[in-house]
Amino acid sequence: MHTDSADQKSSLQERLGRNWIAIFILLLVLLFSVSSRAFFSIDTAQLIFFNGTEVFLLGIAELFVIITGGIDLSVGFVMGFSTVVTSKLIVMFAGLGFSPLASILAGSAAMMVIGLFPGLVNGWLVAYLRVPAFIATFSMLGVTHGISELMTQGIPTKNLPSLAGIIGNGSFLYIAPNGALSFFARPQVARGQTVIAILPNMVVFAFFFILIFAFILGRMKFGRHLYAIGGNIDAATRSGINVKHDLVKAYVISSLFASLAGVSYVMKYITGKPDAGANMLLEAIAAVVIGGASMAGGSGTVGRTILGALVIAILETGLRIIGMQTFMTYILVGAILILAVIIDQVFPNRNR
Image (cartoon, rainbow, N blue to C red):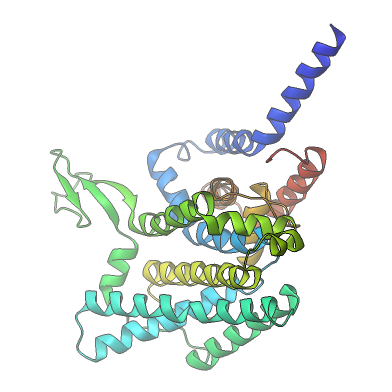
């Protein structure tokens, strides 16, 4: 009888350990809803995802590398590099006579190709030259930041087509007062009438790529290889996995998602800044660790990383709504990160 009671208590603790993030999110929502009536609404929910777009993307960037047992310290400044190059390319294509939409598409597509190179260099250094990931990616942080500063000379990129801001701050679907649906374009209505906007474009943009790579990580052989490398690199090598090749891919994917975060930033703020992602490294790593991934490698999922990033996005948006200074976010994220590490020590098998 006593054994059954002990087993039930242990099982309850394990369930709480596995699901603490969801419980924590509910507590945050409840706290901010009590603090401000404006918080609990569909508009605020969409604002949370809109504000957190770059954190979601950088969290996934970091996840692929951390699963292998590595780390990518360059993601924030690769994002900044991406904002500068994307904005410069869009302005260049517009100057060549491209239409605003063609300029935006061409500049963004070109950046997604250029954005693979920092990850390619990082992966090559780590996999083939055995440079510690900390050193390799920290060096790339400096390189991308320096190039960005040289390109801008301290002046944020301007003169982008206004369409960029319309796309970046628009929504996928609009519902007019008469119930008519409009995709991408906000319908014209009489003054005083309300148009309901559903799904910000940048959220759709981010999750399109996130879902693709969630499938790759969770369902394809490459994803299983990454977990094997992070679990035991020697065993992965003996089992026939091309460890060096897959490590390079992981860092390239990390760089790709950091570049996508830069493209998202340009669309939202219509500018390019070298330091656009400078403060986001903590948030990216925190999203992965809060989501339950081990810094030793071998564990972590896209879904849980999104939950970890959601905690940060809720904090940032909630603090703004209740009027607190945004630097409080860093303090709270650091505290939650410590909490996540403690929970991981208490429940080491919670994500098995």
